[in-house]
Amino acid sequence: MTVVEETAPTSHYERIGGAGAVKAAVELFYDRVLADPELAGYFAEVEMAGQRRHLAQMLTVVLGGPNGYTGRDLAAAHQPLNISVAHYVQVGQHLTATLTQLGVPGDIITDVQAVLAQVQDQVVAGGDRAGA
Image (cartoon, rainbow, N blue to C red; front, side):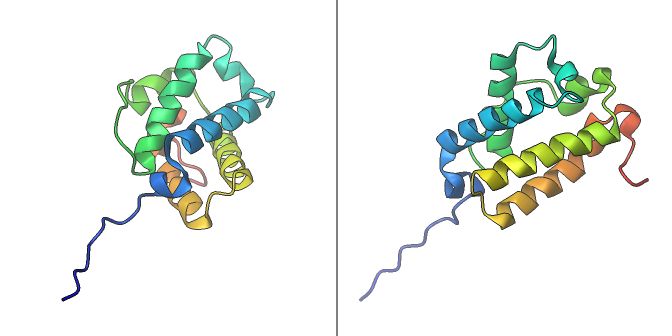
């Protein structure tokens, strides 16, 4: 008799390498964003160690990893910043470029982009939609 062991499908989080990979992505992402003169101003008064930690927790959840996020919800954290659609798109492009540079599989990048599209209204000032 052969016993077939069923295993849970591997999450995106596990596929990219877990916490170490997420931390590397967050570091590279913020290096890119802070070097972008159009976006750096959003972070002038931000304590970046905490910011990086929050994004790592959030990205972990998006990728199907353990949920340790305890920060504010997206709207509460972002609406006061009056983020434009153009800047939101720019940040998304930096995240996509970061994930691509780190060799993240295309299907995972597509799923992350889908989440970015879903949460855009919570982040962009006035809930404006790109292309609307």
